[in-house]
Length: 422
Ligand code: CTP
Image (cartoon, rainbow, N blue to C red; front, side):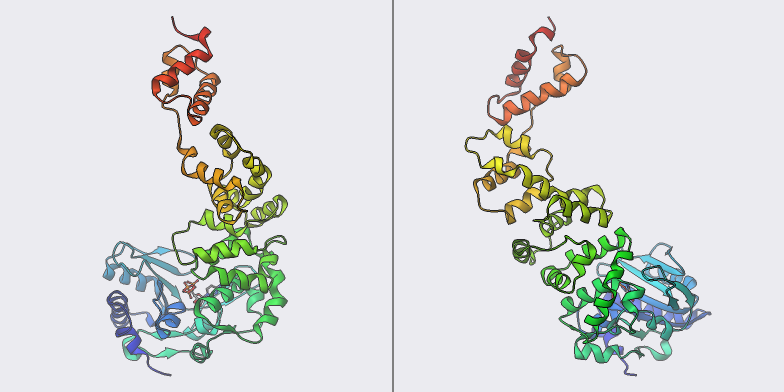
């Protein structure tokens, strides 16, 4: 096996190097630790000279004692023990490049059923690599003093990195874990790799298993796609291989939405609700509701998906000339901002667009100065009238009929003179 020690030293930042060296020292000093490896994406990224993400370590032996010692030496808090023999060391306040170090006990996994969580048992590094998704993610580099830098690559991931291909380790990989279909798309596009020739066949055979994933898992995977800089290519590929339709039959990405997303891809600052609203632009109400249901989406995400169809029902009214700002506000009040933004970007260039822009930039910020307390003070009784009166004042303010706080109070007084304190 080649020795990649140079990747651990010259190609890694000071912080990564420091962690690797702690690992080497601990493995030398701690009884019960028979091997320590960096595994998965970090190995792939170091070979490709891409900035690696967080550090994934696989420990053969006592991973708990190892991770406690590593946390102590890096100055981090005691690790969180998550699922089976997995430890997370949070280093975000300590390092700038590395926000966490995940330590797993080298294990074998088996799947009793498609899309179920795997059964896990402690095992060797080779078995730990065998349970993984793709050959390029199934390599490890030893950090132990005796064989520091040795590549462990029983599935020829190194060859596949050179050939630029994404290949599963075995034919039932997507059946075991259908989230790997999303992952295949992400890695192929992100790395500029091709899917191995058999992958399309394996994907079509197992695509129906997407149905077996929980809403949260499907949504997480979909949102990970949206969070990538190359999301447009990934969405195109997802559509091509039938992944979007497998998520929900009506889910598709319109040409206009793709165009808008490609214009935005350069910027990382687009928020998730905006991305969801643009991606689902053009879905009708039923289709949008089905997607929300399938994603088991929390309210904020759900609204961004259904908001487009809701807006589409009322938006034509905004083409009317001479519409008062208060009427614009009335129409748009219940529509999520992300859906309005999506319509501005992807909707037709009709007069409504100017009204939407005016609403987003100006109208929605206009609020009356008076409060409920001011109204109580002039004698209006506690209760729903207060809110209704404030709404009257808000409309007047939107339409420029009142400007100062005193104007607002006078208006309120004029509407219910019978209630006023003498
Ligand atoms: N893995 C897997 N099957 C999954 C999820 C993860 O086999 N469904 C394995 C892969 O070996 C992967 C590793 O667990 O490399 C870590 O997973 P993750 O952090 O999601 O991926 P990374 O490869 O680190 O990639 P990324 O750069 O996307 O974070």
